[in-house]
Length: 458
Image 1 (cartoon, helix red, strand yellow):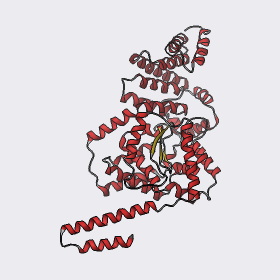
Image 2 (tube, rainbow, N blue to C red; image 1 turned 180 degrees about the vertical axis):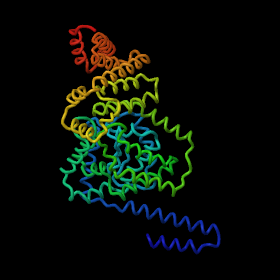
Image 3 (cartoon, rainbow, N blue to C red; image 1 turned 45 degrees about the vertical axis):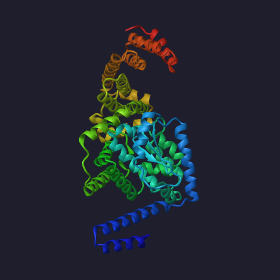
Image 4 (tube, rainbow, N blue to C red; image 1 turned 30 degrees about the horizontal axis):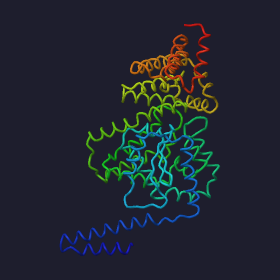
């Protein structure tokens, strides 16, 4: 193929008698180059090791869905697949690959590609991203890992060098058990550990750069703003806004290096600017499609004991759509979950000793024990009082929009219990059960009612 290409180059140079002859020569070069590229992509041959990995990958696909980790929403799934499939390279048929794009119910900001063409984006990353252009950059990057067979090559190189137990332990350090944070990583670490290790720490610097280069070129080709790829990296660099816990993406690889690389490429590509109205329309569509998903992620972040992140997400929901009761309900839930924790880290938490104390509490104390410890701080009780007031305000706003939004009464009842307003808590819980007589948590709510009825009214 190389000799054919060199001959065609020589031929095209010698044909300078007319524009039509030169054009034919250029077309010949282009066709030969495409053939070389297709040959390169098809040169991968499966070994038994690769097929063993593929078998485990297929099991993981089924486990993710079977364990309830795949977020099923027809609108979101259709949108994600439309964006993703448009970024798949044309004219390349990949053996044992079928392209499917999914969202996983995991508040960790992450995306990963399985070598069979299944690409997963966590709710945490979907919520963090701001527009379709950033999403397209993430998907194009992951598509490259599949097209260039990075998982198989990575597996061949490292399967004998690193013990599976070490990878499982490594993954657990970034996604400790006990909550939904990083649950896709924990599952993957037991089934396809080498793929998940790459998801955490990245492939080689060269492969990651190749994936970023393809992503940027594909963004330009599809009319997206390539600068948004670097913007997505900067969002990940912010450590999910307000949490003190480590977010591993800062080492995947060094994000600053990837930002510099992509911005340098843009300078060489000189893409046409995307009209501001087009960018704004895509941004609004992205946020509209994902509004329900972000509410789900608020709940998942709370379950992961990342209430500050949940609050950031909930505020974004209210800002985007202030006419929806569900968004104010999410805001109330986020404020309520803070308890004695301030909405943003205080100066004492940002010191070296403060960060160590936070790490110690996260490692050694249960959530209930942490809450009691926070209440003992000088500002703990005041923070809880203010958070309860903010939660009450958000819940009442939700009910002013939709007085029959049942779950808000449950949240309001919990806030009133915290505030010691037993009579109002009783009324709120009763209204919840009136609107939701078959609620799955009715026994728990009735237990609250029994307790409140024995408590002197305030």
